[in-house]
Amino acid sequence: MLTSIMQFKRTNIKDKDFLKLCVKLNAQMNEVVPGRIDVYCTLTSIDNVFYVVLAVDEQGNPMGMAAMTDEGDSVAEVRCVFVEPKFRGKGIAKELCLHLENVAKASGFKTIILDTWVQLEAAMKLYEKLGYERYDGPIKHEIDKWCRFYVKRLVT
Image (cartoon, rainbow, N blue to C red; front, side, top):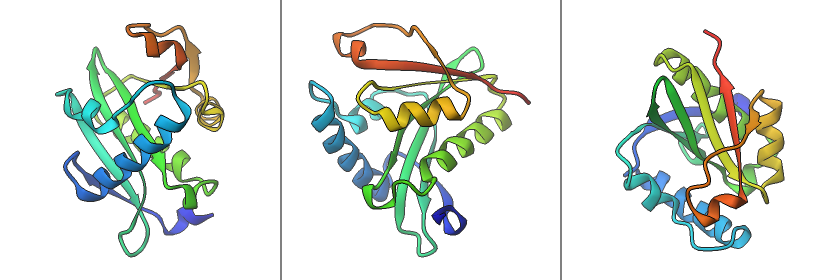
């Protein structure tokens, strides 16, 4: 497993490595999801992003990313979990999710929510393996019908 040499680097949405990964995530999403999605514009248009992290190798090269927002009422939302294709299958997404859960607990959150696209079967399997449960989320936009919504209660 590559995760033994991985480190987490807290950053922000203006970090150049985070931006590069957003571009790659946008390209991937536009291949599998109908309609135009711009992850970076979505993150910059909300004011409740409170945690952004990169998974980096020993030399500081980015391998993956994730972000989390404060949704109020002790609820955090995981956003933009992405791992570079060449690093997939090595446990990095799992470690990013577990890291965000630990940050959420330490920050006083009681619940984490997230959503993913129905086309991303590996992501859905990962979230379910980590104990997230599906729920009927809000359908605010036409594109939301392509989403699967998940929730996990955090045990402190």
